[in-house]
Each structure stands twice: as C-alpha cells, then as structure tokens.
Image (cartoon, one colour):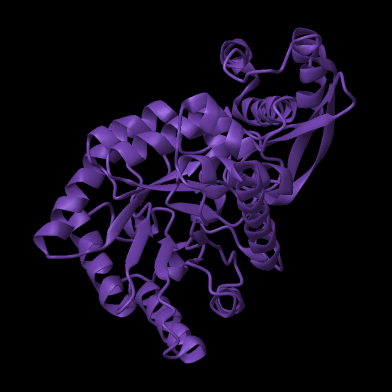
Length: 409
C-alpha cells in the first residue's frame, strides 16, 4: 500500500493561544478576553483562537489516514516554537512535503523518521501532525491499531490496560473540580495557577485552594474509596511570588502538602529558571530541600523539558519526579514514544500530556501511544471543559483495549 495523495487542511483547535508573558505581567481580564498589549512575539492579541492543520493521507486502497498539526496554549515561551499559523503551514506542507510523500509505501513507520527529520524546519506542530498521519497510515496498511503498530515497531510487550487520566479545570476552577470528582478522574485539578493573585503574596491563596479541593473530594465522594492524586500546575508563580527563593518555595510546597492530605500532591513548574541547565539545577536543589523536610511532594517538569533530549537530561539528573511529556512540543510521535520509555527506564513518572489547544484527533493518537508504552498518566484533552476531553480519551482507550483483546484471541 502506498500514499496516493496528501491534503493539508487548515482548521480550528480547541481553546485559545495565550500570551503567557502578558498574563503573568498582570494583563487585565475583560470577560473571557484579556485587554492590553501582547508581549510575546507573534501574538496580535493576548488571547486568540488556537489553530490546527489536518493532514490527510489518501492511500492507494481508498482509506484515509489522519493526523493533526497543533501547538500549545502558551506558545513562544519556555523554549517553545512560536505561534502556529494554520494557512501558512498548510501551504508549506502542500508545496514541500506532499511531493515527497506521494508514492511512498506505508508498510513500516521506521523509514519515515529520517524523512520527518528533513522537514524539521517546518516546526514541531508539523512534525506532530505529519507523524500522526504516517503512523495511522502504517497501522491501516498492517490492519492493526496504532497502539499495536507501535508495540511491533519498538519491540514492546506491555499489556494494554487503562492509563490513569489527569484532567484540567481551565479557569472554571471550582465547577471543573466538581465534574472531575463526579466522574472519578484519577488526577486533578490542574487548576491553571497562571497569575500571582491565585497564589497570594504569602502563598495563602494557593494553599486555601488546595484545601478546598481536598474538602470538595471528601464532600462529594465521601468514604467511597476514591483517592485521586492532586496535581496543580503553577506556571512558576511560586518562584515569582518569592523572587526565586527556593527555601520559601519549599515552605509553600510543604503547606500545600499539609492542605492536600490525605491525598498525594504533585506540583508542576513551581519555578522557572530561564533555561534547561538552570531548570535542572534548581529542580535538583528543590527536590533535596523537600527530601530534607521529609516531604513526599512530587515535582513535575514541563517548561524546558520540550524535546526527547531535554527529557533525557532531566531524567539523568534526577531533576523531577514526574515529566510532562508535552506531546506537541516534542513533535514527531517517535520522540514521544522514546520519551515515555526513557522515563520508565529511569523510574520517573511518565505523564503523556499535551495541551488544551489540541484536537480530538491528536488526543486519540496520544491514547494509543500511552497504551503501547505503558505511560503512567494521560492528559484528558483537548479543551478546558473537562467533559469533552474525558469523553474523547476514555472512549478511545476503551475501544483500543477492546480491539486488542479481539486480535489476541
């Protein structure tokens, strides 16, 4: 089977691209919008609709393989690619990539790694969507699921079983929590702690929110045995609140841990150190301070762990308890697979994450990558509405597991 044609179709992703620098600097809210002047290059507005490009590979037997090029909410910061321009990327795929793909056989994915490397200048969003489509094409040619194809090509023999799901509230930080508890989400709430007002000058606002989440779980779930992991993404606001003082950040994390009990606590990106080496240095120091205090708080790396090489560096340095493998940032799906496997090899929790700015297609492909590699956690995506992302990833996971049982029998 071969690729007969290639279509690149500009479209919409979920949620919005946001100028993180402007928001952290205190851009005022105007309803759902932000007012003020953007600070990050490429932004015309502080908040603008997220874009996507669907890559459709028409195969010689008439089947159509599909992947979506998407980016992340906070593009252009933390070492990430700039904003995704959908029409421009679609035109470049049509002009530069499609001629190189037409006529190629799709019996194996491995040969496409080198070709995708040739198109690296198109950016991580392009690599992400193109590789999804190629992986889907190879799975269709081999009459198997994407998860099964990944296991064949990487020589994996990991039983397919449900991967715990982590959901994010977006700015609806209380109703979103209720949804998650009622639907028994494995890890919650994310919380979008993206400005200093949510932390408070002494950290008390953030501690109070952690305590509210804990109390809400107990109020709605009672003694049912439901024990989610509490995972808060702080976007470096604790470090900003305390001028980078790691001792004071540690004190805040300890207070959050106390407020979260009896639930385990993960805190994502408590400080931003401005570069990969500096981030690793400070995370190593922060983990030592927590260990000396007898804490069980787990530190989650996100920013500056943007590539498989970055993630390997974090893992070798023992700089984080959890790595968010932010799928659109890594780009090609084979790097995502390798990143999960590297985390597993180093005893680091592999959270196959991503962005609210993805699409249902990229989320579905990530489900298969998580199942095939035995990831420890998977983000419910796309969007910030909780229900939609949970439905997409949980249903795709159930279908993929059911199909694996049929093929094994």
